[in-house]
Image (tube, rainbow, N blue to C red):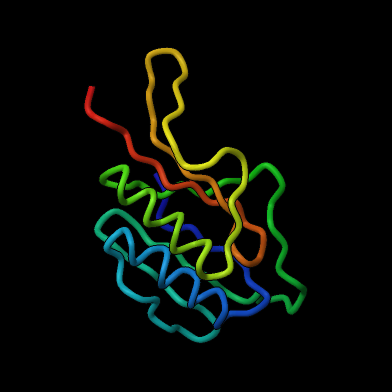
Length: 126
């Protein structure tokens, strides 16, 4: 459904350091520069960070969340740890299992240095 997700940042290099570390825990290589942007790609999609092209400050979306698939609980924990070590902040509950009805997920929610809400998600086999 989606071709890519792009987030605005007010400090491109701080954001690149953050996302290189965080996405690296999911096996995604460092961001590749393209003008005032960095792209992170894997076989299922692209994620990018950019300074706003209109010259206005970047802001985060209240109620918005970007979710990243993880292959294990350990990968979710590594994602969260890398985020906190690189300028991110935990939000909501600490990383762990959440259950709702028949669904059991292992999640970690956090905010990037610009305040964007991120989630690492692992879906265990039933």
